[in-house]
Image 1: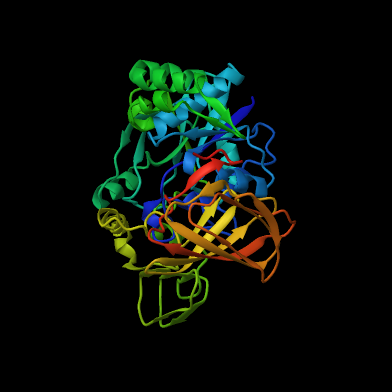
Image 2: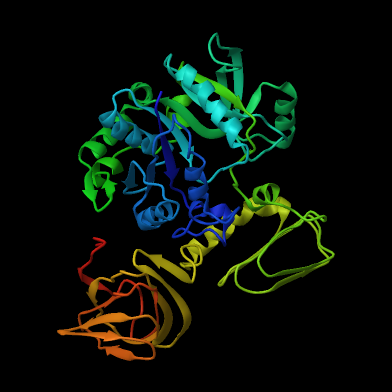
Length: 472
């Protein structure tokens, strides 16, 4: 059997704010290790003969980051499907199923969120093979994590009777919402409840058949979105209007809670969905006092805490069971038992029309990145990095002028009809309303300082005339 991994790389990861932001969510960050969670998920599939190249489903705004992160680890995806908007897991998986079915009528798909930790990859692979034996008989298999504690942050699966085929595989009796502490303790004692991992294995046509029965609007809308999809560079864009017409629903609510073909494969694989800062503390290496630290951190009399410094020295003295996360523009301090309330902070930032929940001070673009380093009345200063071969769009601003100073590397600058090369310590001026473009023709990164001045300095003051990345 050949299995098509489908990696779902959507979501904003708000519970890991301030590290995770809408523009750079947790699956695209090195949260647990040196590689990003998406990279770890893709690499976990390498070297397995049954597993083909992955199909990625992600949002439009993350497409270049996803492509670049896969390129960095030498993973060439089967494709990257772009969701015009988030519609939850049932439509995302349905779009992937329609896409795969067009390639292979008998395609078997392994659905994996991009932001999970699995420490025992051999046990995980063995669980996949056990599930594959059931899929041949029309099963829709989900992986139930053998619980190690009465967790209240996970949904549960109650298992039913054993199946005649498969090794220690069971029918699904019912899915259970996140329980309170007392109920979770009863679940663990009962021995027939598993954490709901959100990972699945089934044939694409079997999933679509069940979806058509229980949620035909999702099945038809996603079929149309794929049929009318179109290529954009290395991506496949789902049709915007058709996909928006799909109801938003999770795969559990749409299919798994209703189908008679749901089975659960118990798996003890060192799984964690890293859904909160306390969950991250559990999977990270800790010192003798139970502290998990990253970055420039000083501790004195601190126990059972997570301290993460991204930019500055963070000193912590005489406290226990806390989470402290420092980024360039925000700091979180919370008791470890209260980290689920981080989402309330994000909601507050949204209501106040602030930007700290949207992006970091460093913002990534397909050509490189920029970082705000100073801002004041009618001026703004940015540090810009353009990757080798990178090319910004030919553009114009209505309300601001720009001064560019090259720090290192070589810049090819278009300003009106003039094209010139600038090197270290050279500068140029871009007047308001002038068509201009910045490129890096060299083999090394281009670093420059940009000083903007004018009556309005927002990122939406940009008119693009030409763009190699085909952004609107």
